[in-house]
Image (cartoon, rainbow, N blue to C red; front, side, top):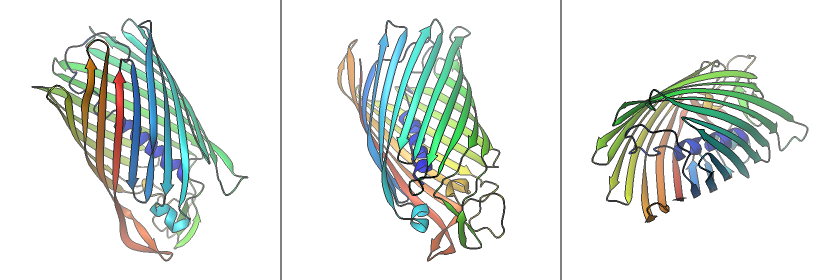
Amino acid sequence: MAATDSRRLARFWQRLAGLFGSLLAVGGAKAIELPENRAEALYHLYKGGGVTADGPALLVRKSLADKVSLSGSYYVDAVSNASIDVVTTASPFKETRKAYDLGVDYAYRDSLMSLGVYRSKEPDYQADSFSLDVAQEVFGNMTTIALGYTRGVDKVLKSNEPSFADNAKHWQYRLGVTQVLTPRMLASANLEVVSDDGFLGNPYRVARVFGTTVAERMPRTRTSRAVKFRVIGDLGDRNAARAEYRYFWDTWDIKAHTLEAGYSRYVGSDWLADGFTRFYKQSSALFYSNNATSETLYVSRNRQLSAFRSFGLGGKLSYVAKRVPGQYELRIVGSYERIRFDYSDFTLVRSGIVTNEAYQFNANLLQLYVTATF
């Protein structure tokens, strides 16, 4: 079970790490620039639904000759898993996942080209990928068009069955447009298409048919699409706000909606406070069943494929501990989010019997990090 859950948490943390970025820097357009030189050290903690995952992360980025920027990151997850899936079918476990990421950015006139390679490894799962992205500013630097591609290959193992080995392949295509609407407002639209092929389930997970546990049977292909719209506005007096909507659908008949909103405000010259909220709702997959009443080709009781909704509320506070204009800046940041999950057709199992008690839980996500730009 560790492979799917920890990879999902990793993607979750990566998305949160860039939640607000720099909301207040939404003035006039300017030519594409390389990312600034940066060094970061982060500690993250996720706790909820019987799962605790924490560990450090390090990032270093350095520009060369104002044209090339190199970056490298290292990420560790120490996972203690006693989720509802685990306690109803297996024993709780602990494991560690390590991830490495190397990237290079190249700026040429109004274009920025980025290449990255990524590896994640844990006892029963290894994921490798590379990505290529190109961003081009047009119409007097008022519009940015971005194209991206990622290719990934995963190796799936099973710790209690050495003879088991399978793989999964992934293709991701991205298209985005960002437009300066006014000197105080930006809008963006993004499209993402993902194609998966291979072992897409979890070798440890079981389903239930007539109340009896059976091995999960998953399709070996999946295509998903998502569109996302975002507006960011400078409200004046060092205030900013954002709103965004994302719609997801796939060939497994899952449909999902995500609504997010955030507000950012400077307090004095050294403090920046952010507040945000997120609502998510999805339908269940075609072959998902809490307790199937007939045999079918595919069947899964993975709660992430069931119908559920979540609501998150959080905040982030950053403080400039040291600043030397034109040389460096040292910033201390802390963020926290409280998330509520409610499942409509995934119920608890007690003494081997599927009940009518819908599953729900609260989760907490904490990040503490120090970042230095130079």
